[in-house]
Length: 304
Image (cartoon, rainbow, N blue to C red; front, side):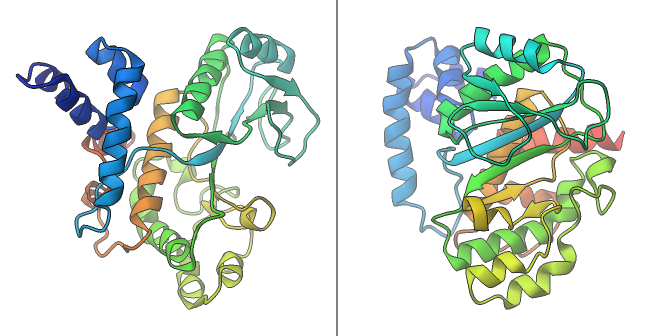
């Protein structure tokens, strides 16, 4: 697909637009096209503007990732001091801290007692936004790989999205859509994260009735009673975020990036839509072809 786009007898602008529609970041598009980032940014700005003006169309079209978010990565086999040195080398502001739930303006490395393995830790981001945030995350993943960070079944990946602007309809749709698709999402995640196999990311399927009956956001956040679920609403009270706890531990940027974009697409789709059919191909409804291909390939790998 990439080669076909690059070979098209058309303008650079049109090629850039098509690459953006496939889900590539602006940095990646600039590298593929051999042009400056500023040129891609100008095309991107017009592209997002056009998407926003046509969002009311019946057919859903994913928009680019521009959301405030936070990341928590659990791993082991690296001392905190070694990881801090590697992160600083890559330009990441980071501190080693005692276990805490306070949002900082820097990355923090803390202890997590739930992680099995020597030198277990959790690295927690500050509030990140859009593509710039993804670029920071990419450097953090590189540092983790440089240090030979390990993951096992006790490790998880938690993603927070800013929910401060969510209206009741969208918030409810997110929860109901996620619950409806939970078994489908399980298919592209390891068995240790499926159904109720993990005490730190329990199913939310049985809470659908309480979610549906909620008439305020307060009632909605109370519909899922505790935070150790695949989707945690308890973070809304303290941080005004919604936390996705479903994904297995990983230090691979490609996996984290695709998961974040998938969640972003689901949140955008849920602004005014609910899932009507539940099977794997439903994911095509609200994801870019590149993201859907990634999810399908993961499903096939894990089924092998």
